[in-house]
Length: 108
Image (cartoon, rainbow, N blue to C red; front, side, top):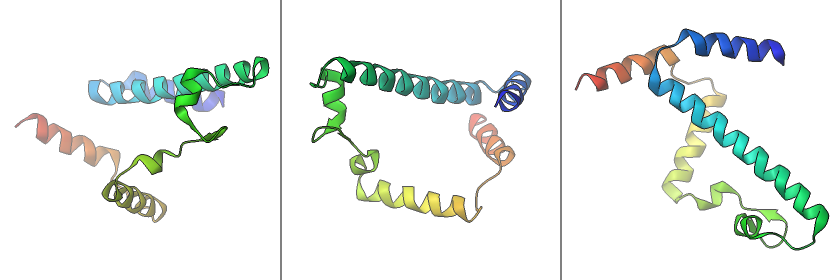
């Protein structure tokens, strides 16, 4: 795992794309927040059988967690499934192509 982290550090250090870096930061921050919340949920469940307010708002029917897919509209859900299918068939757009598209958008 440390080799993967080192590779990520190198890639992050080599880019000057602010939007890309902000997206990476937001994704990592979101993951850290989820891990922190889950850790707090685990600790609070050890001390009490009642869910705390934040935990209760995220859970449905006791200990079942909400599925984020249940929160999507039918159109969003269809897009999600289409994207997953494309990913599994390796029908994705290379990062370099996306950068070129963003550069063209910035020029407008």
